[in-house]
Amino acid sequence: MSAAARTSTRDIARAAVRAQLAEVALELFQREGFEKVTLDDLATAAGVSRSTFLRYFGTKEEAVLAAFDAHGDQAADALRARPADEDDWTALRHALDTVIARYHEDPARALATTRLVRDTPALCARQLEKQHGWRPALARALAERAGSTDGPSGAATLGQTVRAAAALDCLNVAVDHWSASDGRLDLVELLDEAFTALGSR
Image (cartoon, rainbow, N blue to C red):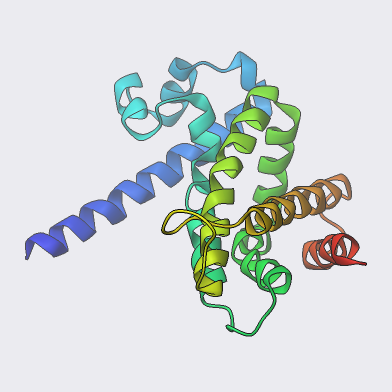
């Protein structure tokens, strides 16, 4: 087996373990409450040592939010792939389909995670911090699509940064309404409505 194949196999195995630990953590947080559960509790519930758990997740927050880590880059990549003649706002809306796809893949889990995050101040703050890191990635993607910047190489304009921030706000408002409806409302329609409301002149 080549070194690349061994690395790929290890990565797949590590991702599977992370997913399993995250599932155990979510179930325990839902049952006992996020604040009451310790890292030792998580390790015990997962049947691993505390040090093993910490190798995969450095904090309790990360056990819940790690699934969101790649979303910013995925949305930015999707944004770059949008047609060149598409306006920024429309392109941003379509790029966010990569983020809400997980809500369609497993609505029940997505709803449980969303509620846990929204109802737990520490998780909510950490999630917003993560999303704050998505904004420059989206703004840079807009700058690359435009082929020009008003600052240092690779920098986005003020307008591009504002549009990226507004798009993420639309996402959060849509997800909040979706969660409040117990997942009955269509998240795609909610996101469309949010973008339309902010894009209206």
